[in-house]
Length: 556
Image (cartoon, rainbow, N blue to C red; front, top):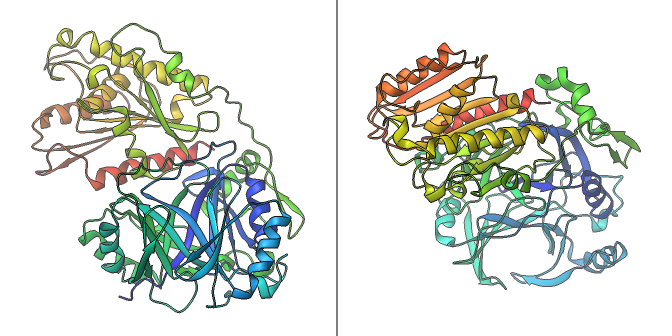
């Protein structure tokens, strides 16, 4: 297995798609080599910029969420993307940025001069001036002359609380070489080099102990992708990384490359992507970026997708791609907390959100925390699901507990918390409906006590939901509790995962719950994990991730 060659691409969140196009094509002189959609969120563009063909190591990609607020830089994420440019081009790029009224600062990075500025949403873009590899394939129609063209990526910068744990990944399984360290305004900056002589060789880590984590939104990096030669080598990395303790996804077909993803221990999301098949796989080099390209599995929904995405102009061809949004959703996140009825201990408690803003979302996930947990804790599942189509909504129980006794206790002994918790979920479902997100586009799920509350809610309020998942949970009430619930779950997919030796959730209750829900029309996927304990495993995350992908695809 060869060491990682270097950077493949960087994927970032944006807000206004046209401003994003204008910045990269008109200011930086990069070609828009592909216009497609986020395969996990087909109502959102996925825009790719690079050299003439989109060679690995030149590719900057963006998911634009219209009207998204700006993110906040912090630990656990990539905060800057640096391009390389010839040393003789410093004055040219300073004058060019001044001509576009883009402020910049000047720095020195490991002995090389650099300038730093922001993209339209606040991501730091840097240009490092040093001699190195030329751009793999210069775009002849670039507004930037060839002698001053950006030569692909130089490096990315990640902020971490501790460099050592990320360094062990880079210099261990990934095969990077440590170059050296220097002081940065934020802390100690350490550089690592991929094993290639091409572009995009470096990853810099800046250690910031005790500093807060970033807040993901527009201008935030979603993930950084690293280059591997082919599918066979990618599978080797999947195995090696899994053996090293990282939760690595299955191989994802991204049409122009194949991908696996894993989150390192500081929080940065990495991808390992193949060089092939490349962007000319479905349109000629002469027409790259001219059309909205969709994978075969979305072609049947082309009309709906083109109507939903905002129109953008590709200046290279003078063509407009996409249509106007048909969304009628109104309102704000604040209505979640402000509109809840007060009829129990949980009403009036906070409701936390992350992911897509409600007035831009077509789909939502309601996450219900367990006993002793919190809304903030369970929202971390959104990072593991790694799907940007969804608004993630998590209610907070008073005192961090939805009901006082075991879920197997007589129902009356868990009142009024039980009814109050069920009411809180119902109010959120109704509020999402007012925002234009119907039950069939809502997925409900939870862990432990939250999983029990979720299953009890959907059983008592049977209808078609986008999906339901219960990590270590079952229906509430003692043996013999009547289960003659009204309504029909109408094919709702329900995932139930639990250990066979869970000290809180008896196996029989899990099995009975699965049978009861299936009897009320649900399509139940029950998985029992030997000797697992009271926790969530990777297989469960992947199962729910697949469920969410199917909901997102149906929602267009």
